[in-house]
Length: 257
Image 1 (cartoon, rainbow, N blue to C red):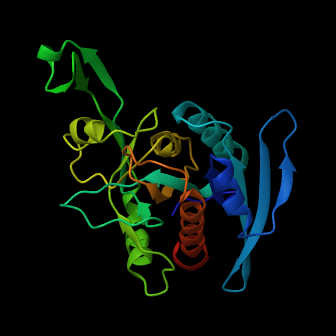
Image 2 (image 1 turned 180 degrees about the vertical axis):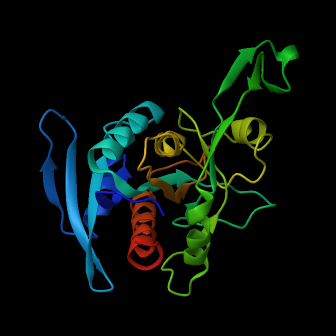
């Protein structure tokens, strides 16, 4: 494992709902860094008789640009061993995948950018939306292989408080509420995609390309809807809670410290 870390775990959220879910699990103190407009929160958790440090930052807006910026600041300011993004995501309904329910936790082994590509004339591309064609150029970032056995152990553990599973996470710059886009632009590229969000790719990229000591990125997102015309906010609070609950189980019980 890498060393010279200053913080054990850094948590990232985006929405107010996700931020409120995180606050339920620890007693946080506000940390203000001079010259930095980001507000951070710090806390501790105990494991095997030892105290470990936590930092939390809420990203100011949705999307990959803000996520990359905030993740990078957290990495270089606090040097965390683990950079864990928690929150909500869109699930999928596919016959070749395990059935998903609201609140189910997705822990990706790879995150990929489905919005990267080029819009062209429809006769120049296999993916067509009316008179618009799309040539995909997806990029992907993998969760470091060294931590995957621990994530699998957590998913399979009898102590796991949530229904969780591992699979690819698709990440893009817009909210998806259209089944046609899922079928044409996402499943044609990564057929086993288990969920969609708007920030995970940026967070994993920032961690994987940071200077040493490089944190291990982990994404823990819970299903709040299914990225179709029935999309709603009804289950966001529940999904945010289960995501944080599983992340807490990870760093308090499973991840090597």
